[in-house]
Length: 437
Figure (tube, rainbow, N blue to C red):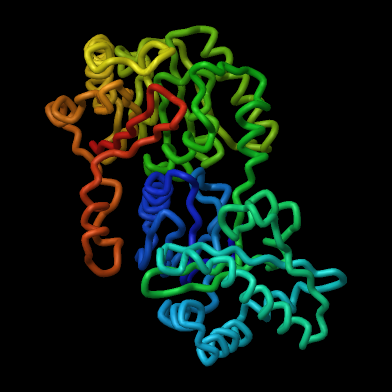
């Protein structure tokens, strides 16, 4: 959990950094937080957060690996001079910057007995990539020396030389209690600025694993990972007390994550086995996480008639309908197009029903199939024209007003219309759309 309520934070994303950034933007925007993204890359995001009275809890996110509170920032040019041009003067300046900030104060506050700390370097400046390990050792040695001068004998946690990047994993940080001990320094090197931060939150994969394979009822073939489900819930602007509907709920993965987000959830599925499984899984979740005030309902019904079935308006719809048959091989483009044509009536009919059940201002987060093909050109579901005809407006996940400055990279991001989750080993990926009523 982060103890930072305002200031500058760095966020380390998962593998799909755009999906992680979209989740973060939606999470903060839904809570009307004033914020500005001052740097972004596949390695890290730096965000100024203003006037936020809540505590940022990393457990609320599916796509964020670490959160850190920035204690110092300085020009990346200083690093270039120090490590590429071997400037002793600039190395001395960096040592002084590290030694005289609240990162060291926090470590001294927690240091007792055998104190172990670590340093993880995240680098979005290609020129500095070859010296990332050198930077990591330099920062670690500087911190260790400073702690020793204050009478603390500290161990600098290393890792195997064959590790691709000089970074501690979230599991290593968890096992060494580094968040509680303020013991991991994040050194984030951007193209213009570099940020030094202390880790205040780290992703707990064991909790997501418990909700994935630990729940009583499973359906592995059509399973959505809980992390992706949580991202989609956040994309829907789901906040405590809102009503969220998944009309193709399966065994309830999306409903679980919405329930943990303190929403009131409503599920529906045509398959009675899925209805029973979702109920059992949600009951297990409420007991496992002591969600005493949670409200959920799961009904058997056809999503193409759901407005009449559920008889109420909802604040958000988050769902993954049928994505087509399981494929043993990458399909040809004509075959993938044939699958899309067969699925169109389901998706188009569902859009009409989703519009009926959504309250004004509500969001629909919808997965459609993204087929890889032998030609290399993907085949997707043509959804937007139908959605607009019904009355939906597409939500662009990266509003321009949340980004500092203006450049080509920001403009490209702002123009993003949908998001993708396409694993290398899968024949069919997910395209994630956000619509607004």
